[in-house]
Length: 73
Image (cartoon, rainbow, N blue to C red; front, side, top):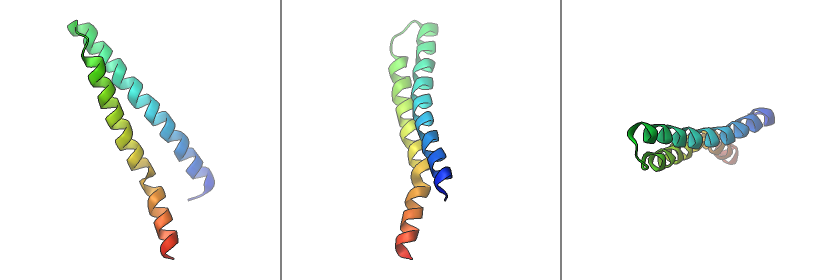
């Protein structure tokens, strides 16, 4: 994997983290406004964090495989 591709992938990780959390909170706030509650923003935040961590893990998995392949050679 070239350095440029790796750098672009890492920039994408940052955008993915931010967008997952923000979308989760906004979805929770929207549900809260429809149901007149104050609980779903927190559920949206937690769900956004879980999605962000899982997505980052999946995005960075090729980097770990690349490192292990170089060490085995």
